Image (cartoon, rainbow, N blue to C red; front, side, top):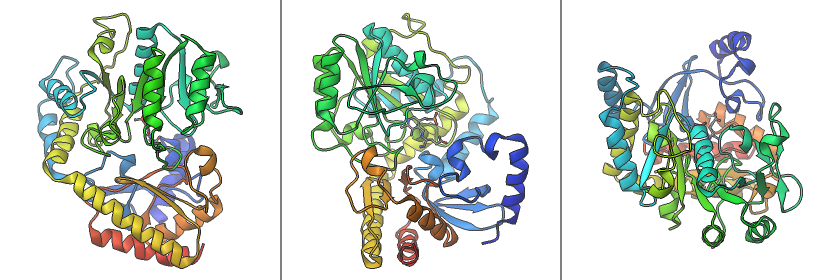
Length: 427
Ligand code: KE4
């Protein structure tokens, strides 16, 4: 596949941008080679600057749930931009968005917009600490909640782990209150609360982790977290930046019938523009400035153009039978990929929840990060590049989820499966 123009652009990018990218996942460091550059996307397709057409299963990491350049979003953005791109003064779209989110997610009585998922999660944690007057936060290995200092922590050894910064530049004192536990292990959470009585402000969790590939909560796991936090006066924070409005109209919390105290959102609610949000019970949210003592702010929070894009995405999702389409497309891809792996004699664990998926190159089931780490990453690399050469763009890391949109037709998915059937015989 000719990628001359991408190669020239990447060489230029390396002169001015660290690693040539504005977000590390884009750099292909996990799969080798170098990233291509895209200047056009429509539906489930992207075209790189050399004119190569690709079926896209990254979907800008989740926002493109209706496919790229959906007409409703494009016209909403144009109309809003004509009237001004930002006011720094309340605008009507903010009220419409807040009312819509509260209507779609019953656990959210009030919501505050931000400009990224990172800001949403960082702010939700600050709010949980301010509301409970406690310092410690539990997160789970393999879960990613953006790059706020106190969250750049991976599990250390042992069931009860106090975080050690995973990123340089994060002083140990910034993560001393972050406890990292294994996902899908109720006993570890119970022991943690027993060892830290009245000290834990809350648990933040991706209800369906999509940042170590994709694995699912075991039956009863989320219910147990809800019960343990309620019993111990801690808050349950669902990070639905990725799952929100994707796994169901009301997100993973609707799909799994759990009522968290706070929820974080992003991606879909921005329709491809920079948006995040966090919301929950009014008595908690009212601790936020200007009403309460927990400060949180943002110059462009609730920006009219970003709100218009997110509203168009959300409204179209409600109108178009989208969730039935996403479920059917996910089932088609799952069945086809499993058949292809079986026919090629390659051990693949294909995990899926709705329109999110991940194929791990391992014969063992994947229920947490430790299981995911057993995947054969060399095989994944070959598969990734084989599929790319076949015109299918998967997430450039074994430890990322794939995303299906309503724009992926049965023919696109069949073409993907046929490509996989051939490539799997070569890895
Ligand atoms: P942003 O700050 O990137 O908008 O959101 C952070 C975030 C928070 N919570 C969850 C569950 C997330 O998935 C994310 C961001 N996800 C990654 C994909 N693994 C974004 C891609 C990137 O980092 O470039």
